[in-house]
Amino acid sequence: MGEKREIYWHLPGFCYFRFLNQVLLNLMKDYPERFCDGYKIGSVYGTFPGAVWNGGRAVFGIAAKTDIKKILQAYNSKGVPVRFTWTNSLLTEKHVNDTYCNLIMQLADNGMNQVLANTQVLEEYVRREYPGFKIISSTTKRMLDPETLKAELSKDYFLVVLDYDLNHNEEVLKMIEPYAGKVEILVDEICQPGCKMRAEHYREESRMQLEFDKESPFRCPNRIQESRTFAECRKRAGFISKEEIASYADRGFVNFKLVGRGLPEELVKESYLYYLVKNEEREFIRTKLERTLAELRGAAAGGAPGGAGPMGRPAGGRPVGGRPMQGHMPKGGRKR
Image (tube, rainbow, N blue to C red; front, side):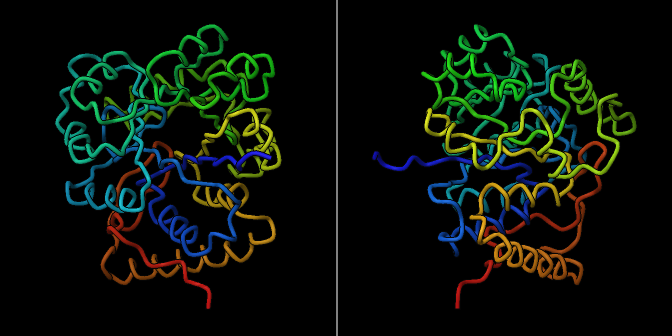
């Protein structure tokens, strides 16, 4: 039997879910035997609020330079790349000179971090001005044609994120298997499969971001009316179960993405516990995770360092409480 393959997970909300993500990373370091063997965090994706290059989900607000640096340091010091969702589909040449977005790129330009892209104008700009960033082709391109997808995989991308409507399309998976190491698969998308409004939704989110229009959220006719939960994700046709991950990895698909932008933290937390933690260890890690998060938020509410202060709001979401994390976070607690 060959050497066990490492599997890389790409987590949501490096800014919005910064407390949750940092506590998780500390627990993975403190209790590696309680997490699934060979699992690594490949990146944490998202945006700083108010960045006009951002797409997929509009996020409003602003982050100070010192806060940007602290958040980047918090992940990068643990060896985790930060991946920017620069997927605004309406960008033109004038937008590449945006001061705020270029400041973010300059602060993150250390050879470790990454960019999700879906427009030629921004991709060319990043390749020219910031060659140290790995470029990932975004799922927002909606590449459903197999030959178009194959051509994309032959280009100079670090990864190509598969459209989740293709997650179980055996014909497509077989065709792209030679490129499997360059494919990233979103395993738990909550949106309706085959939605005809998805491209329009992405364009509208891009418009909202460019115009700072938080009063006109996109009204998708397919949006789930009840509370969005991880249980709902598991009902979707594109869902890939924990048990199925190994069969994808055996074929060379080792990069998996978890949904979360604009969704409730409870959903994201449940996805982490389901995919990353050994089944028999789930309640132990849940207890550690929730206890540490409560301590952090209690300290923030009390005005301790890392205290209250909104950092941004995904469209349709609630404001985020708590200042950005420092370059370190309280440990999840070591074994006694």
